[in-house]
Each structure stands twice: as structure tokens, then as C-alpha cells.
Length: 343
Image (cartoon, rainbow, N blue to C red; front, side, top):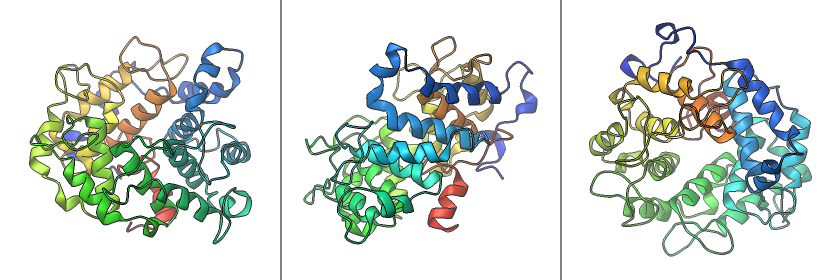
């Protein structure tokens, strides 16, 4: 069953044959990413390695190909990225960061291997390896404001707040942080246009709106959102070509097919955009021969946009895709397995 029905839902039968999702090329593209070690780009993107695994693995699960990457090798790589403080770096030997830690938890949850943290994880083992990860995240919360830093150097951002609540909820450790303070901080980031920014007073941005809405959803406080005002702002992100942008007067980009559409889904307003046009835009951004999806038609593909393009299509109910969870950006059946059907 699709997350949505009506105008927001995609119907592949209404699209020309040449504008269909190229599933097998996308699977092969993702599988090939770790084999390009003789290319400079592979090493220049090492700081994205763990997140890249999350993007690729999630896309494969949504495509219905969960076994396309080795589960054992995936787990081994994730554990090799963990630091002694319990957090995870972007690659082996990298310092721990909250975003990499979230990706690690999401990947382990997706392959049903969170218990590996208790058995083989690093860090304080009192109460289990998952607790060591939870303590790392909890120590990044600003206890006065409720927000979170990304790492020990202190940069704060609503993305980090969302990442913390996401990871802790998957680990069943939300009690380690002050969730009410975090909610108060998100509310302080609300703007007159209904959107949310990176911090109080900052410009509304689609990516930050997703982070704030998803954090409120995890905290059970989506009731604090001005749904109609925010829905109007988000629906205005759709441009003539069908794609979505992050802010007024900006170009459309496939990744906002996720940030905007998921936010609209969370507030029950996905039907306020034209799902058919958005679907067609995403499909025009794919390389149907070599696989992968780009930010816009004709540009170079990458795993980031491949992931968010496929996730956006799943939100729109594209036939044959696994259902994605709008809050966690993971397969819905994984979230139900970890948190239960009534999370």
C-alpha cells in the first residue's frame, strides 16, 4: 500500500515507456561503487564513505534487492569505522561524527545487526555496546538549549538534533537525552513563513524543515507544527518542470524530492504537489544505461541523488518499490521490525 493516494501518487502506466525506472542498471551502479578504488574520486570522497553505504544500501532495499550487497562485509565495514568513544567515523581511522554515527546505526538496523554492537562494538561496554553509542550521542547534547553538536568541536545544527533522535530511537535509548529540551529548540527555529532553519532566526530551508519535522515526529510532538502555513511554503517549492527546490528562486534538485515530499507526507499534504510531474522529473534525471540518478537531467549521477530520487519515488507510490518511512528514510518494514508497527 502506498503512503499516499490521489493526486500525489505516481502512476507509471501514465508515463512513456522510455521514462520508467531502470532498476537493474541502478542496482549494478550501486554495486560498482566500492570497486572504483583506482579512481581519484573514490579517495576524494572518503569522508562520505559510511554515509554512502547507507545511501546505497537503502536504495537497494527500496528497489527490492536487499541482498545485492554482502551483509557480512557490510557489518565488518561498519564496525571498522567505530571509535573507542562509541561513535563512528566516515571511514576507518576517521574521527567520530554524529552524521556518520547515524548512518552506522541505520545500516545495522537495516541488515538486522544492531546486536553486533553489543557483541563486537567498541567503547564502554557497561550495559552493552549499543549503550556506548547512545552515550556518545547523548554527550553531544547542549543541556542548556537542547540542541546537539555534530562532534567534539561543537558546531550545532538542527540536522544534528534530528540525527541524534533518529539514532537513539533506533537504539531504544531516547531516555538518555532531554527530548523536551530538544523539542523546545526545534520550536524556537520556526519562522513566520511556517518553515524551519538551521538555528533560531535562520532562513527556512527544505532540508532543515525535514530535520525539524522528523525530530518532532520522533518526539511525538508533530502537533506543534503550523500545518497549513508550512504546507503552503513546501508546495510552492515545485517549479514548472515538476522538480522541487530547497528555497525560493533556486533551481530544482532531485534530493528535494525527498526533503520536501517527506515533509509534506508527515503533515498530510503530499497531495498539494503534482506527484505525476515530480515522478517524471526524477525519472528524467536517471542514467538508464549505466545506472544512477543525478541532481538534474544531463548531470553526472551520484549515490546521494540516486538514494533520494528512489526514496522520493517510493513516497509517491511508484509501482514495485518498497515502502519508505517518511521520518527515518529507511524501508518501512525495517522501522516496524525495530520499533514495532505503532512506532
